[in-house]
Image 1: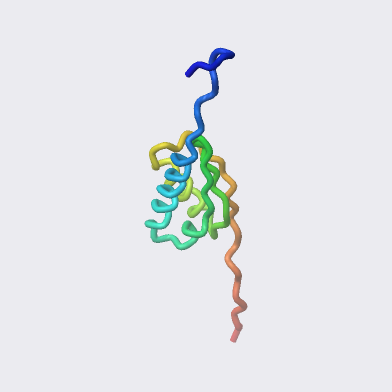
Image 2: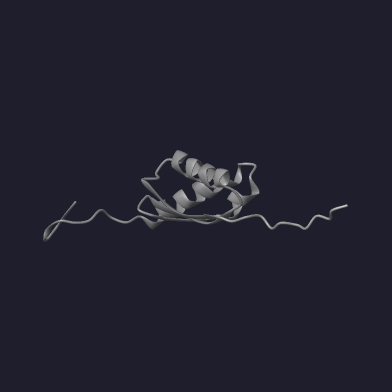
Length: 93
């Protein structure tokens, strides 16, 4: 693509980014892991930011693996935190 100054930056297609976000969210929601359905996904020119909290390192790795499998993901930015599940007190007999 050319401009008056020579080459110009590639055009930004917001519709493609929204479509990519939708496809990633659909892929995550089809997994039988409730924590993955709570993650936030933002895309910008194929660079995907995954943000939220999960209960285990396994869920975090699974979310990364799922995102990378979706066509159009160029880079994945990890903003997913692993938090401990609330513990309940158990009575000792």
